[in-house]
Length: 499
Image (cartoon, rainbow, N blue to C red; front, side):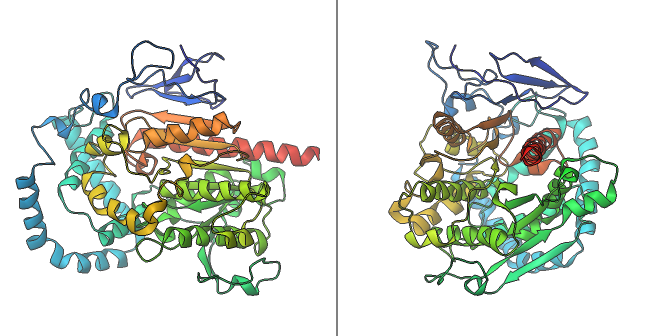
């Protein structure tokens, strides 16, 4: 019953079996020895035939995230309680006595080590640990036995982070190490962008910064050129046109953390896989900046890409990760409103709103900044999410009142108008914190005739794609997003040829 999903044309890997490929059902793909995932390209509201809830039209009410949690293997299957105040007090005391006083020194030392060395240590250590975990614990620690053995091993290690206090410096350090978790090496030419004043740039519409910075910084990765040099005989989509295709990369970090350096390696890996360049734009963070300033930075960086770098908007695909997806969605909604001659807030942002990009990839989008409901996925799935856990929420949630005040609803792109947005590719885990708000965004967009391709994985944590060096589920999801980008570029190239 209810509205189902029509198939996406991604071809399963040799170790995967499509369970159904009709026009009346989702494409459910069953990898060997891993949980199924589904791909949905419907124009109707999403109905997940693999989850524990029921579809629209059933007489049985859907389960809440709280009820679903009761069916999962929480806390490694042990009688642990992260909410236990006595236990948390002891751990916080240990943290203060044994860790906090020297962690700044440790962070500084680690940052000075070559990325290649950090990557080698990280990946080698995991492989040794994984073999031990596989023999001793197997599939007993993740939230469900069907999750890959690798994800069980990661769960056993990462689960304990919820007991330790989280701070903004710790979050920023962790995300700065993302390149060390990525099984790839940067070989492309990378330009460090530092445009001091966009007001002075020819073609720029900016008259002043309105109290905000007019400086654009970031990294521009020439990954399409590197791909051609490494594989001259590969007929990837970029070879059929002289026009540059560019991914506009917006990192995540709950607006509190994240940086371009940490995202460089995964960004270049995606760029080479898709045969495109990548522009990683820097933007301000909370609490140093308010939300409007962050949106200004992103719109200004996109304006730089169009005006200074002379990239056609039709050749740009946005790539947002978590809160970066929120920024990508927010910017597209503002461009759509401006094109419809509707008011944009703040009004001076209209000076830097460039034309709409050709599409956007939204990975585990964090797009709802209102107060979360008690039974929803945001609070309930934090009890087992390996990235957004209870300690992360405890640290991060108060800052949204500081940055947004009474504008939390107004600033939530997942609850805003989605009319006239370009095609979207959305990836999410059915058991991660932002699952509920992702489906709200997807369904609202589809109701307003936006083409949305949705990939849903099971039993994974927030932004699990960036655990691809460790877990097959992350690799599957990353390949899915890459395939969507390649297909969208192929469509664009075909249209350009016919024009």
